Image (cartoon, rainbow, N blue to C red; front, side):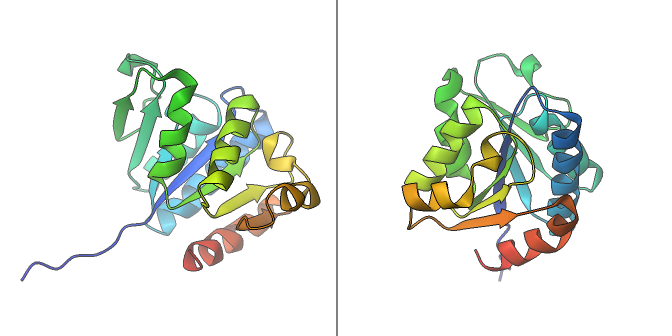
Amino acid sequence: MRQTYVVRTITVIGSSQASPEQIQTAEEVGRVLAECRVRLISGGRGGVMEAVARAHSEGGGESIGILPGLDKSDANRYNTINITTGLGTGRNLINVLSGEGVIVVGGAAGTLSELAFSILYNRPILLCSFLKGASAIPPEILQQIAPQANLTFVQSESELKKAIPEWLHNL
């Protein structure tokens, strides 16, 4: 009899034009997800997406890039698999729906759309609220907009290593 097991798949979202702090945090997220043996989904290109994929790959993880265009050469080199969509930012919905949960690392308008999809489709969300960008939206605002949302706020990078495994356990 063939043995089956479940591999968690988590989407990490953030800016393609990331700050050094966002890059550092994305790398930590990638390392922790690899340690937890979690498959990674991202937008597959630069910035936060490349940093998380790099650290995840170095930890032995499998990283899937969901690309907005049709050209796989737009992908960062750390993705294990690249999926072209030709959908532009419309691929953000695919990013969100492909993961069991979403981790937000900073981010700009594209990340904000993915955060909105995460809320609309009831994905558990972990926000690195200590970073500038979409992940820094105050908890009281997000809870007012979406009181039913499953939101976890991490207040510092030092909390991430402990917060991510606990969050994964509760999915």
